[in-house]
Length: 109
Length: 114
Image 1 (cartoon, rainbow over the protein chains, first blue to last red):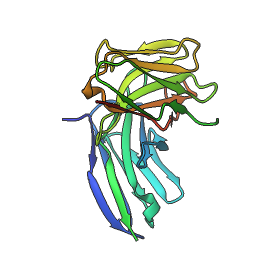
Image 2 (cartoon, chains in turn brown, green; image 1 turned 90 degrees about the horizontal axis):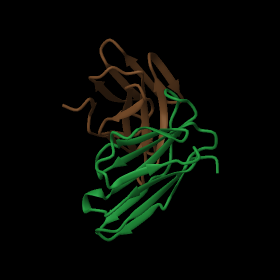
Image 3 (cartoon, one colour; image 1 turned 180 degrees about the horizontal axis):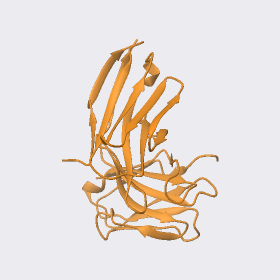
């Protein structure tokens, strides 16, 4: 079993839909990152959180430390949100990231 | 530039060749990470530098992989005697903080070994 599990693996949505991507982890963490990766490889950090909830524009990230679970929500989705969303947890004394396999999101106009 | 810069963006090597991949982190960033991302997979940790010190190299898959950051800024990932299974995107990320800061990623270097 992977230490970081994401669901769903693939997600297709219509423009305007509310989207939720889930991340569960099995290790102790100091922080959890949500990352966005567009075709071509570039990765952008969306959120880094260790508790509670963060919001940036149409994106909301929540984490429940007790349940070892985090969710990324996208409100009013748009085709430009199409990308791979990766959950990564920071664990260990040196802060190495353990990545999930990613959720490929496609938003249709 | 303002971001993390990696070069080359694309590299094709014949099996057995040595390759060197360069990472220019954001100026002043203390932490530097290398990751390997195979096609369709999430990135996997290779090694971590704090300034010039390589504090963790537990993710390097074999002794053919070597990384350095001699002056605590630019880092080079070297792969000797490349094999087909080394084909992947190699990502570099840097962070201002020692441990828990936000990460900034480069565009990656895509290595294809024929």
